[in-house]
Image: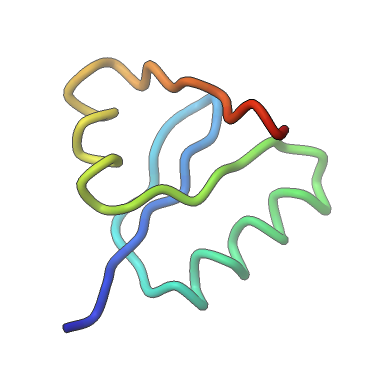
Amino acid sequence: MDQKFMVRTDSGISSTMSRSEAIKTVKEYEKNGINAYIVSEDEGKRLKKGGNKFNTPKWS
């Protein structure tokens, strides 16, 4: 079973993608100075429903 991920930024949430695509996307955002986080598909759907309310990880 392939896990799917989404990339969350302050401006929105991406569509689902593979782990490697998500990592590549986050690295591109980082190069442009944009904070982005990889979240699971389930978490991404929850965020879309809840208006993109995201609890920033304590380690960031």
